[in-house]
Image (tube, rainbow, N blue to C red; front, side, top):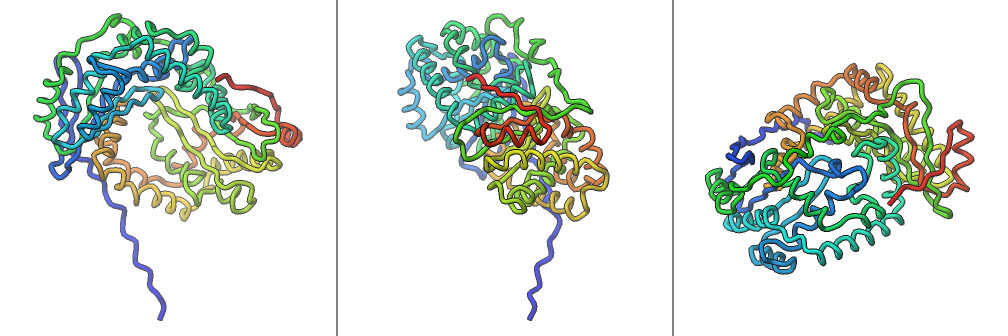
Length: 461
């Protein structure tokens, strides 16, 4: 007898849990999601200073400074700090992205107060010892040298520079070897004094603790007595260089440019194709996320079917809008056979052009993209760590509390006309930067025969 497939119901609605919000007298915001069913706690101190706040002549300084925090604090060296975390069954991680620095902890609920005390020590009482600084800087230099051998990393760095130009978003978090050699422990210490301001920082907590318990732990840790450091007038958020818009937003009627990094003998070419994009606060956010799913954001997307299934020249191709506070980027990321570099570049641009046209996306394509985005969305909110990541996103981009509740209905409401309008305003195929890391002897000729201007470059590391 024929098998009847089960009917598919509507996507589950997301109801983001209530967030307790307080602001301490020193300006530190404390946000808490409490769930007694969780036996663990995830928390993060989100500080509004990221790699985009690096001084122009010191790319990588903020990240290097953050890397020093767990090298010793409050009388403990790095090993003793690690052992204390291990004794508590806790973890501590420090992440720097373009817009913020997040110092995160994870622990059992009964160990939260002690673990938060360690986080406070790292933030308020770091050592910044000269020998530790020299060692961390040397390790960073070695890491940069290693990254020059990664074609994907080289392509990513070249793409960021091509898209953002001299905007602070245009350099890597790790900076450059030349800048690293100029940095001193005094600069790192001074950077932390300017960055570590309670006003503008947010402590986000999710898990098996109540808001009252969190506030008691905050007071026990001393975070409520955290005072602004020196040179408050140079807070990073007020830096005109950091908040200015990039000047290279693509217009119409230009020609894609190819930036080629020669890797003789490479059997594959790494490709990054794209341009400057909108910030996270764009009103077209949900339409762009849906458009991206159709174009290259899922395995069944147009680009992946074209390059992987139809042409057999890649294992996979993807696109993404990478949105930050001030601006973002749109790019296609793939690697292809060397002799197929020009073909891949041409097909990527063709797919960009095609999806911008009115009526280009069928109702069926749209429905599949909406399903891929909405039916699994609830899985992003299952654990304490998931909730902490969500709160970090709200804090980083100053998003409204209902952001996650709105996602499923907003994506479900997107129409083909919305996609066409979003494509016309956010996709510029004729103004793309095309970064190729591959064997110039095999790919330069075909690229130029395609009518593209090819410029040889070597990104700085």
